Image (cartoon, rainbow, N blue to C red; front, side):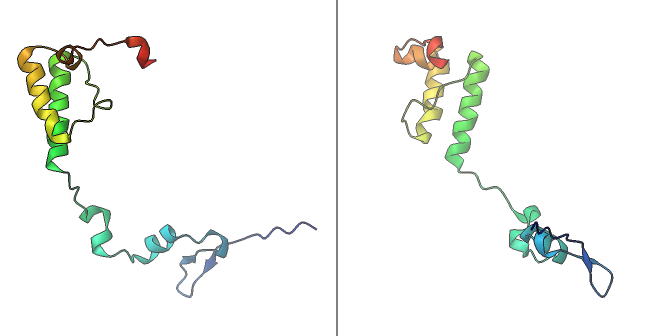
Length: 111
């Protein structure tokens, strides 16, 4: 025997649609009831970025603008604070990071 339950929206006393039992979700409940506290509301959140991470991002952008290519930050274990200084050295000496370190870039390794 195949039991399929049709769910139709129920209405409250004031005529508003209530959620059917099967489709009740937190998002819908919160959205309908406006029960999100102010400190959790998206519009009240401010993005806090670590100043060192922000400096590294700016340094990487300067490198990319200067050399016309990105810098590989994944394969090096330097602290975030060091990247700004390393990029300054690269730009000052007109050498890419690979040239500065005496390494050759193998494009086939990227594939």
